[in-house]
Amino acid sequence: MITVEGYKAFKGIMRITPLCETVKPFELESSWLFKPDTKCWYGNGSSYGENICEIVEDFENV
Image (cartoon, rainbow, N blue to C red; front, side, top):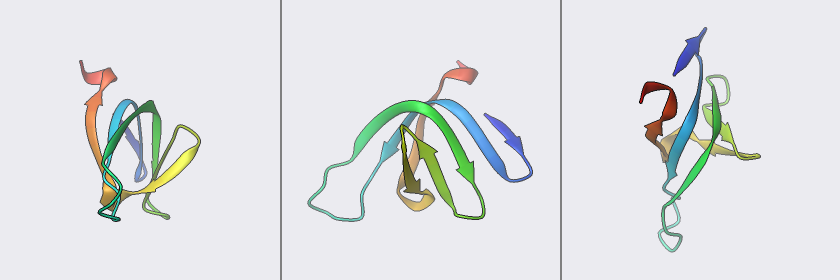
């Protein structure tokens, strides 16, 4: 993972666990960017709040 001035970036797999209990958690492989001002991870053409995201695998650190 690369970290510069609060921004984080990595290529890998992220697990998204929606707050809505009827929606199952899912995983996405993408290039990810975290913006601290919005507290969101951006990847695969969408944004996800940091509170529902968990890094599963960072391909850079394998």
